[in-house]
Length: 478
RNA sequence: GGCUCGGUAGCAAAGUGGUCAUGCAACGGUUUGCAAAGCCGUUCACGCUGGUUCGACUCCAGCCCGAGCCUCCA
Image 1 (cartoon, rainbow, N blue to C red):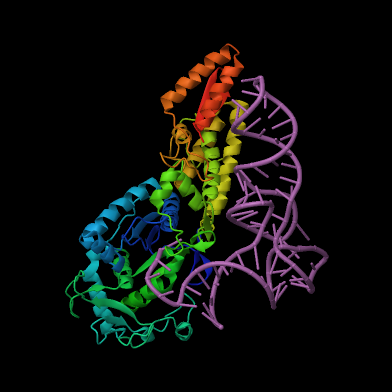
Image 2: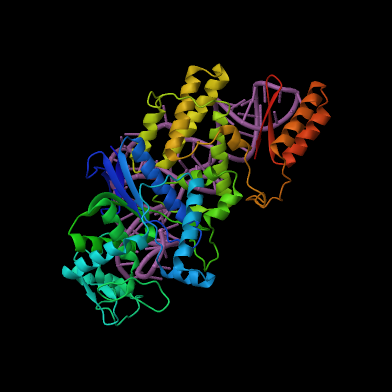
């Protein structure tokens, strides 16, 4: 039984797919005006993890994650770059896919782009007007009439009066109520526009997700996710739109991931604490380190991004890979478990408790180490290795060849390392092997001074040696 | 002001009414030519104040501190 915290009720509830055995989930993807930042990465990794786990449990999953490709920021950036908006968007969609592949995020079943769903949005807006939930304002914009939708505010726990009391909402005479939001923006010179019954224009942001999710998943599906900041107003508005137009039930469970903060503050450009995923990936040993970090705390809580925490994640992940080193990939049956699989499932079934699931992996690594020390590559060791690799795979890591992972290092320019240590001179694998061969000769001659000198050189280059029985020296990069 | 969510050992981070999280770091042991890695062991906790209880970090109340949302935002 999989229990998930539902933002709509504030409680955990059992996942019971509307269509038995088939989970349909939607998450609000990103707006492709730039490379996405590590906060976006958290949301993308979290919902990838959710979809992976549900699949792992044997459920059929249809995961839809949209791409917002029509938006003020895109239009502005495109203008600055002197290209058409869709050209700008296409560039960052390609970049997004590159970064997502590195992060180990599987492609969702569908990745609808807002600009391909204009017809569906117009149909929905028309239906909202018919149903009395929307009106065209004097300036030509079509607005949602918040008053007409009684449950408005349920998701975010807000009341219309309270929202107004907050009153940071700017006065807009085109609106009947300050909280009314735009469904269709009338065209402005130089902006993309599509014809509509209310004049040429482009869609408001909120209607995009209502149109795409219902078109792809129907009016009643299982999970709708996104970042905590989308809870209000975006998701609130989506509910108002979809339910207003279809009178359907829309999403059963709403999931929201917490923020990724920098120095305990939300990332923002004004504070200058803004990191793109791309630049972070360039600084770390392996992309899985970032994924591991993002899953090392529970998805709903806030988490803090810092180089030292990335280093801790690297160390923890390295420990897992060390346990798997020189263990070939056995095709063993994951489900004939040592018990860890059950513990892992119990953790994940409880609202996707990835930190606890990772603790299970660490326990498995310890058992594997102990077993290998005692009995070498025994049947049990193979079982443990297979299980560790398999369960890690459910979370989307431990997919790399251990030797390759351990010998990888941050790409050039990044060895300034999190702690500000000076950049280290790099050595190719072949150079390292040559040095080790030379050291082995020195060791055979019991020339410890020379042996240690060579090791010091390698250490300075970020290479750690491990002498094994039988004159074998394993190595890895730190 | 309204509405949320947090405060766990040096750093991160789970969890529970009554022996254990887990990882990193530190210390000791084992091992090693010396290391590294592994294993074993040790140190270091549950914001404050009351209450309930045989017993609370875990439940309740109050308080303090921090963050977020109420405006585009993962």
